[in-house]
Length: 198
Image (cartoon, rainbow, N blue to C red; front, side, top):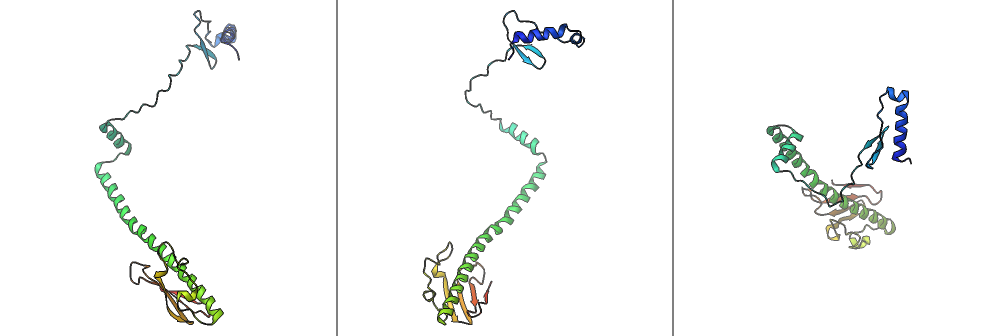
């Protein structure tokens, strides 16, 4: 890397040339008092940059409430009447989202009950094919309390109400908040045809 003295000498040579003089190139002179020069583009500029101050933590400037309010008002714009309409619209959207959120829990409950009843039907069909008799209780199905325990229901919610092979029926209680509250599966154990009440 070239020193400041070399750069000053190169600038002086360029200024002496006819081409350099025509452009009016400034000549950098060697400092008398030892003031350092810094190189910026095509010429030297006097004055060294001061060292940055030591880090002493962050300074947080909190504007006054009035200044902050004016800034937010300028940033957002609009009249107070327009903002009333915006707030009303946001309130209506919030109210519309409440039933959607509450119905998602009902969908999870019905999905769990539907899956458990479907598993019960499949096991009843296997038992019927092996023994020729339709199971009438959860014990005959070979299900334990642990197998029917889920997030919303346990073995006490499930029961078999009809044990005929042509119309085998099982219920899960308290699935829905509106009537009918039960989820019912009806199956033909010989053919495997299945239907739910909802």
